[in-house]
Every structure is written in structure tokens, then in C-alpha cells.
Length: 145
Image (tube, rainbow, N blue to C red; front, side):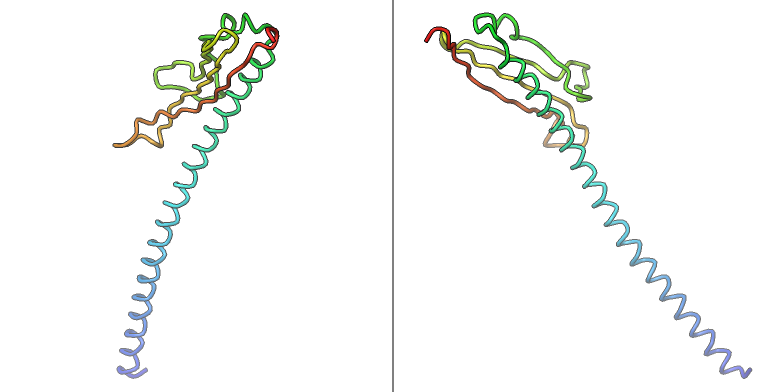
């Protein structure tokens, strides 16, 4: 092998090594951006699951209220009731679900069902991470009609 062909072989190998380093750098940039996207999607999925859990728990409680046969004892039975909403929780350990029954008129009852929970993925300068889901309805006493 001649000395000039030996130098050319080393130069070609150096270009190949440079190409590999650049390819690895490009791959690292793409992999990091993909991992950030996957992490963001996982957080969004967890938030959606928590909201669905809150909605299902509130709907279940509302069904129990609507099925209550005694309109006049509705407030005494349900007002101030708390309930568990799946695995949702507050940092202080308080129960996340609460039912409130008010009487805006003698023959009406307003039922508010609120589920409050803590979502650590939302804590930041603009949010304390506390989330809230609420449903409400007004019931009328049909027996007085």
C-alpha cells in the first residue's frame, strides 16, 4: 500500500466518524423532543382519567338523590353528605366529594354535587393544582301539585 492511499483511507474514516457523530446528535435531539411529547401526553391522559372519575362519582351520587322517594326529607338525608370519588384525593386527606341541598323555594330543592381533587401535574405559578367538577339540578315537589 502506498503512503498516499493510506492517508486517503484515514481521511475517509474521519469523515465517516464525523457523519456518525452528527447522526447521533440529530437522533438525540429527535429522541428528546419525542420523550417530552410522550410525557405531556401521559399527563393529559391522567388529567382526563381523573376528570372522568370525578364525573362518574358525581353522576352516581346524583342518581341516588334523584331516586330518593321522600321529597320532604331530601335535605335532611343528603345535605352535607361527603363521598369518596375513586382514588381522587386532596393533600390534606379530606374526602373529595360533597353534596349540598338548599331550598330556594318551599317546593323546590337545589342539589349541588361537587368533587374536588388535587392534580400535581398542574401545580405551577398559575395553579395550585386543585381541580373541581360540579353538577347541579333543581327538583320540584310533585306531591303538592
